[in-house]
Amino acid sequence: MTFLHPAYFLALLGLIPLVAVYFLKVRPKRKAVTALFLWQAILDQKKNTALFHRLRDLLSLLLMALALLAIVLAMTSPEVGSDQRKDLLLIVDNSASMNAIEDDRARLDRAREIASGIVRGLNTNQQAAIAAVSLDVQYRSHFTTSPKTLRDAIRSIEPSDCPFDPEALQALTVGIPSMSDFRTILISDGCGFVPDTNSPIELIKVGSDQGNIGFLTCDLRRLDGLETRARLYYRLASSFEEEVTTDLVITYGPENRIVKVMPVTIQPGINDSEVVTLEGGEPGPWRATLDLPDALARDNVALLALQPKLPVKVRVESDHTFFLVNSVNAFARTSGDLQHVESGADVVLANGAVPQAQRAILLGVPEEAGWWGQVGPEVDDVLARIRIEDHPILADCDIDAMPFLGARQIAPPADSLIIAETAAHVPLIYRVRQGQRSALVINMDPIESEFFYSAWFPVLVYNGARHLMGRQDSIPAACAVGDSVPIPTSSYGAEATKVTIDDAPESFELTGSAYGPIRRAGLHTLENASGRWSVGANLFAASETLLDDHGAVDTSLPLNRGWPLSLILALIAAALLLTEGVLYQRRKVG
Image (tube, rainbow, N blue to C red; front, side):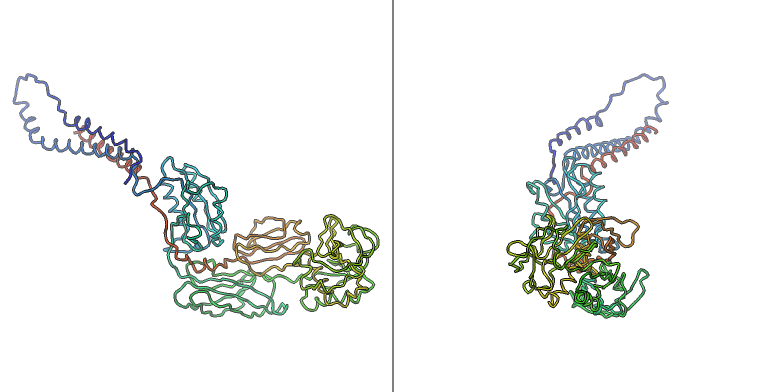
């Protein structure tokens, strides 16, 4: 035991006057009386109770001495152990695995209780800060000596659906001059924590080995583009020591109509992927559920969403309609992603003219200048050089095999997106915008280049139409919490997208071309001018499902927790003084 203020032991000298007061006897004054027999009974009673009074006085002395001793010890601020009394940064892990249930309590509840005990053990000069960690570190309070502020910060830490990211702790060193000025303490079950990487961080470990089963991945896709059949891909993991057999229940729709129930046997550890064929591939929400109780319920359900078929409607304006219409129908008959229409088109495919449409694919450029740029003479060097690698317009296309004969000198607007150009920086494929209008310009003469006979012609039309409508990236049926998904938008991230989670009445809007990182499990619905899509966000994390702590052990150094010993001693002193007060009043009464 150590004492922060040992000088206060000098106050024990107060025992000397205290003892003196109790042993100091007041000599009675002599008085003459006329009759002795009247006092004889009183003197005999006093003689019989003298021993009792001496014992009573000794008890009173003992109580007062103990009270003084407790007060002096409280003043010296005693501590058990070798707590360095540095400032503390308390990080509470609120990742998904902290929702695991042990002894009818979540691990997070136990972690918050430990953090509150540490706050109670702080002395008056010691500061602490509170943070939560899962995908990243989120501060709930800055360094302060206020116990109320710290306790409120601890209570504000809510359960999370996010997995633990060990790299999040490394960000603590950014902007901090020296971590040696304070102690960093992580209260966690250790799932995902790497002690070697995060060696300056002390771990207070909560939780023990528990049996749990969950999804590591799950996906749902239509079979061969049909809407009548679909395939479910899934992979499971188990932390049980023996194999477990349960039912996999697959449901569809908001009412969870049962589509299929099948028995599954899960081996310990990470299992192989499995595939299930489902009759019925209707768009909308789907759910795969493992029907068994285990430590962590959140990974027993996989939420999925099959996207509706929204083909891009393409109208053709050209003197060579046969080739252009066939390029559209090539994908209309297979994937169904394009549809040839005569009116109400999303995109207009034109040759040598600029249609009055919001979105257009221009094969060749007109002679006159326009909002697509200044047009000059033909160029001789027509060898294409890709300027933006992996652009979705160039997907599955061999640009080197495309002849750009008849290409003209073009000075496009400054905000144009050049995708491919010549060595002299003449744009060959570029995207241009004017207000709400946008176009993909392919700088060539399709007749002279015999582009209509090229195998890449329909592919480029397909990529261009989907890109102009913002559908070049397909929305997955499911993703992991912490991932981002592309937002289909024809405004290239400039328009607002409404996001709704689990059909909740509250929703929010965002702008951009991606949504994420997603922090909450559930069915996320994205809606904008381009359409409405949904994606199921799930845990999908091996370390969380397996409750894998990588053999992490408690590495915390001595630390005062709970009520300070000085406060306990002060309460004891108050109790002793109260007891003596009660006894004193009883003596006065008689």
